[in-house]
Length: 73
Image (cartoon, rainbow, N blue to C red):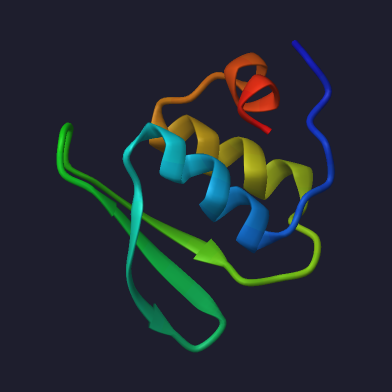
């Protein structure tokens, strides 16, 4: 298991854009991302630093392995 970097919510959105996610809407300090195939919705906090547990959970929901994510950055 690779160690995940500390990144911001905006950096995560940019990286997930490479696998088909787009910003659908914003609500407060969260960005709702949507991907059509397979249909997936994610709620990404727009924070300066995401906790590693939060990042790991969002990657799991997106179907992206931590190793692939580190390569996408």
